[in-house]
Image 1: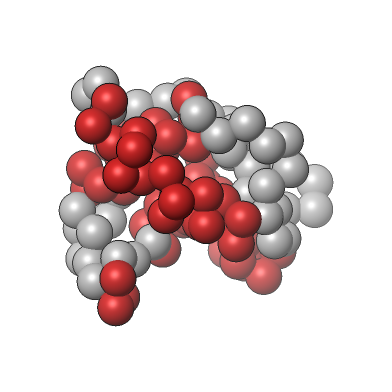
Image 2: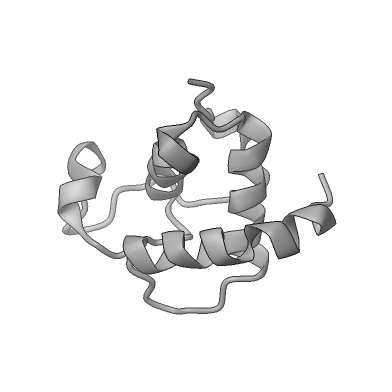
Length: 99
């Protein structure tokens, strides 16, 4: 599975663990996805799979990063809500991916 690394991401993030967060337990830590914290975004992007748990390319994961940073407007998104939004909007937005 082609995992993204910190260096692959196109946006700037905070890599400092904030009070109450544990990057090693982030899936249990909170249902909320902070799009400003690098370790949360990296873990989220790398956890995504396609239909029938198909592997995703790095480019697909980076498209999702771009979608979430440039087009997703919720201020407190749950991971489930975010994933639903990505699935619903990927076909429409991905052709405009600028990188």
